[in-house]
Image 1 (tube, one colour):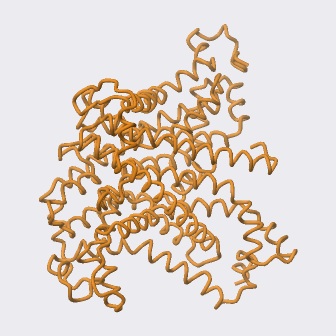
Image 2 (image 1 turned 135 degrees about the vertical axis):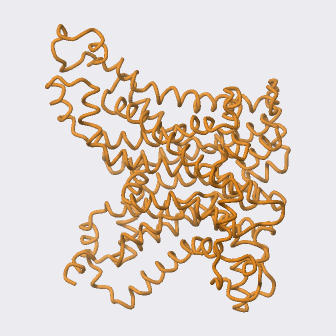
Length: 289
Length: 313
């Protein structure tokens, strides 16, 4: 109790009933609203169609849970290949962007070549360019390059929002590494490359993880480019596939849609749950710098 | 400044290594992968987009220069004007609600509560799952026949008929704003929480000694200390909301009667399914001045703040 009181600052001045009303009740309402759609997704995904479309009974609960929607999704649609595409595209574009960003951030932050400050500023501005104003010209470029409707269209365009973000984040991390370490290495005869690989990168591992996790979720969630550049079913990503292929005319297969939404959210949710702190550091770091 | 500062004697090194220790050369080399990708797929398309806005390009047909015709048409186009109005309305209302609720949630999370780490992690879930997929959940929640909200309200005896959330213009706007707030709120709350945690407790103690109540502490300590991060976070939030596409496309596709069409969705509809690349590009380009204004606003706001606080960081 003693420790809690210390940690709580001057909260001991506030009575418990008052805290219940001012803190716990609003917090529970927030949590309920923020989490309800996930519960609703999950419960719909395991409801048989008969229960989904009946007006009687309690819709908040399921009486005969079923896996038929998942079965339909995994066996009778191209969902597994969308999943595979999304995974592949997200992984390749994340790793490629990370590699490019490490070099760029190190050059801007530590090599301090002429004009590096301006390049740093330009990177930040590039981070603010939204996909909504780029997708039309990018579509014509992708078409001219002959990579329209292929995974390459997305692998090459996703770095446009991943590189600025990760470079900006890594610049902040590199800045926090003391100059003296590099100077020592220089005196000991290390080349710039050796300094980067043996000294800076090991120290920047948390930053690399943050940038990597964030970049992966960004590319997993991307929708506009994937919707514009991909037209054949077997090349689609999960978000595009679910919205364009699972909706047939006016008949909505809500069960399968929710199962698709749930499964498509799982990989990022699982990744996030393992690296919450890194993710938050990446998100707030990019904003705070 | 440009000579390699502390390299071993030049005689012992092959010329290539010497060259690689030069900041300019090495800097250029290190910038090359990122620079190439960004110039080819970001800077060039940005310019190309502006140029396309002045042409009558169609899908599969390179355009001819037609000057400001696309813009002249857009000004007379009632759908475009409605989309601009919608975009402003959507951005303004969603951002104000997100800021208010986000700040509140951040303050709540800053309290001493059980399972703090878990609660914080869970709060961010709406932000990390793919927007399109959570939008599908909202689509189902807003369904005209089977909406869970309608069901609950009718069981409580508050409504007689099911609400057609996405079929009525006013309700549809409210519904998409609610979904946007749901998704964006955690981002703002967690970023502001990070800001709150940097405020030294001694300031609150000093304020308490001076006899400040909770409101005065919030108004005279929390808010001023938080304002730089508020400016940055809200700039990001406004930019993302202003250019939003996914949520609208999934929930309403701009309907009913274009009531929820934003500039981004209209640009997509005209350019990709409609095939009028030039017109779509013009609509997209029309967003740029507003985005620049938002960026400059927060940039100069921050400058003023720094000048007031007297830090050079």
